[in-house]
Length: 103
Image (cartoon, rainbow, N blue to C red; front, side, top):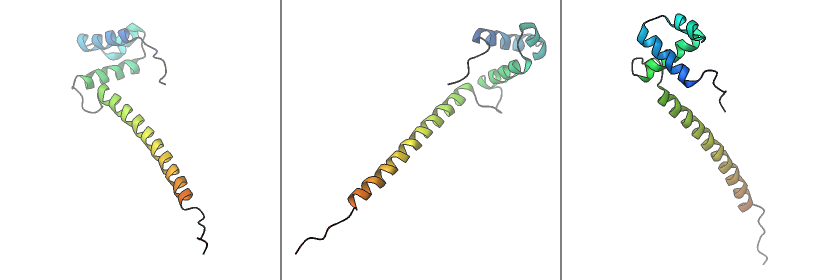
């Protein structure tokens, strides 16, 4: 479960919009709004990536898809291990001690 967010989404959007429209430095906007400047810088970078202005980081949608695929991959690996263990168990049951037919 992800950690709770320190800043509200409305504040994030407002701060990013202010940086992008005003042309003011990130540090000044962050100080005015009481936000850590590196947090705001990351939000602005992510907004730029989501808008297609940056190619050096994945968009929010791509990041979410990657997270979901990693979870699904881990679940499938666990299921595969269970199936492997079960197949070994049942193979041993089938190949268990055999008795010779009496003559």
